[in-house]
Image (cartoon, rainbow, N blue to C red; front, side):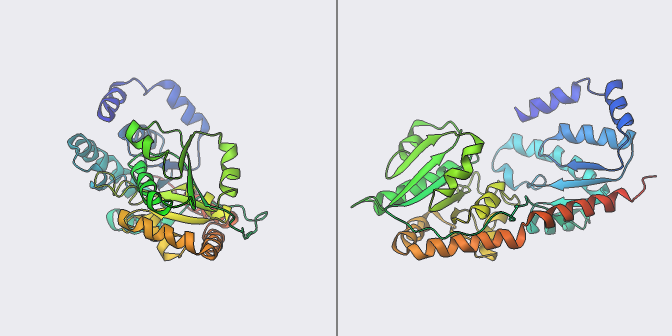
Length: 328
């Protein structure tokens, strides 16, 4: 389907006088060019850059270049072969480069000769303070977000662990808020052993749901098919979790950027294999002080690395630096 969509765009009549007039009339000083995992957006970007040359800043927020996310999918390899060509062209000729993680910055600089600036979502700490929370009754865990690229498998692993942990009495629960449609077998696991699938909720309610939890859950897949899909990404869910000041329980491969980041900052209880999940959850059940300790660590990590004024300053200074360059 991805390849078919690329063909439709390639044959489409989007190169129009209206597009030219819009870009020409706007007469930007600098372009902001996110690099997406699809070719057709790059075609539009390259068309504009060629016809109306201006300095430009790129942003890479995922692994949109290596073959690792392709797994064993032949069509994904074919698409990635052609995608790599347009990604390289944009990256090698940009005036400045943003990446979402330090690992991606190192990767990007090595591949394209850039000097990347790390840019993630900022947190407004001006009205936030860490609040210790006394755990009463079962430890309440919450997951909010989609369950694509194998994340449901990691939640199933939690359910299986809870089957043993809650064998005698319910000491830990997991509420799952997600719009993702799942199969019957997966749903059976996500509605048993103390797990409850709650479906989707309005975005405005998410912060309150997280606030009422004891532990917030961050998962990536450990299955072979999806193990490296999030290799260089950084979920904005993590910054929301940092702001909430809640203990983070995370599952993911130790080689991917978000898990490495959590390890480096000691900002979460982490399982890098499904076999570790039960043992790590048992620590939280037996030591409620650890829940508050890691909640504080997560809050301080966000304050240290994602303070909104500093993030905005980094963004604006980089854009201004690029704008001062003149395209010939």
